[in-house]
Image (cartoon, rainbow, N blue to C red):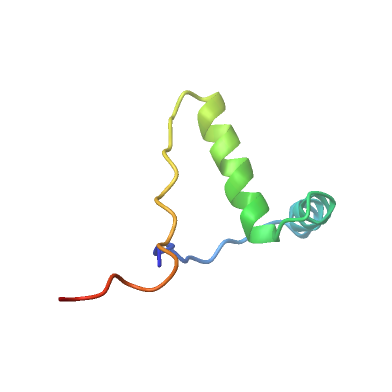
Length: 64
């Protein structure tokens, strides 16, 4: 499973409410919405952030 960096983020309540409304309208969690907004802002400033590899699904290969 891919590891995510966890940290506390203090937001103005009005900003948090706006993020939650936008996330609900786009069927995302507030966390996913914040990550998407950050990626868009970085891209706009010319910072290319490659997405992490998705976690592997299914059973591990058989040994032997």
